[in-house]
Image (cartoon, rainbow, N blue to C red):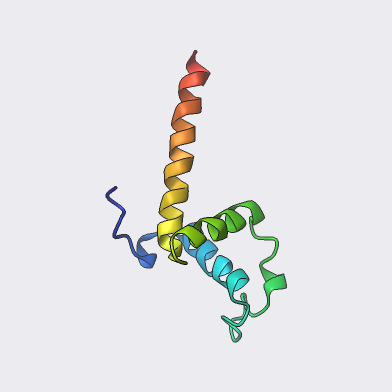
Length: 89
């Protein structure tokens, strides 16, 4: 809950890399002059499951990718906690 107002620059570097990749998939016209993101083929390999999951969640957050990352982290932490408990049983 404390990260509700988190902005783009407050995220770790790996998460910062994934947001522009998701944006590029959603709008191929972005980042045309960028050395790394100029074409979608340069980033297609980049953790496809994570990027596509972020894109799916961003549809529910009105393309707010930082909020989508927060939702994804909440879900991941929840399942990690639940399955961690089961590993001790």
